[in-house]
Image (cartoon, rainbow, N blue to C red; front, top):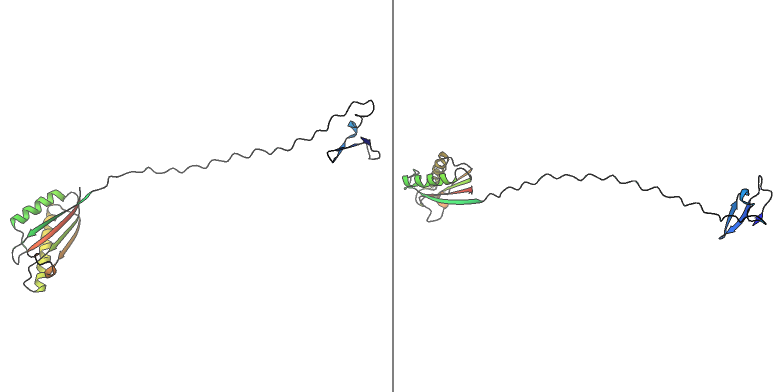
Length: 177
């Protein structure tokens, strides 16, 4: 080590350590000389430690609404053919008993009631249309009188129906089982 003079107050020692210049205060310059105890090895100041990263605040997990599973409604269709007399829209006693039995089965859970009236091929188109619609309405109203609810669809097919479709109303009821 070499002593440097003229550096102001006190003398500093300069040492070359691993190709870096290290300046040691004058108080430690006295060590390591002749008759002096050896100077302690310079210690590197500890590297600054990074403060621990802040703990992330947990984000709340969204709560989901409970899932309610409802049973699937099974739908069933029932079709009934109601016969009428020639040029008539009056229900026969047999037709009334068939419709009453159908109403008892479906009145609490009916969803859709479709009545389609048909007529014979003879007669004018206007009269046939009117008669087929009147037959469909009679059937629909009779079912309603027994408490059969649901969306009503009433059609009169007139002479446009199939050849074997004379003198009748086909009623189809869709209901929940």
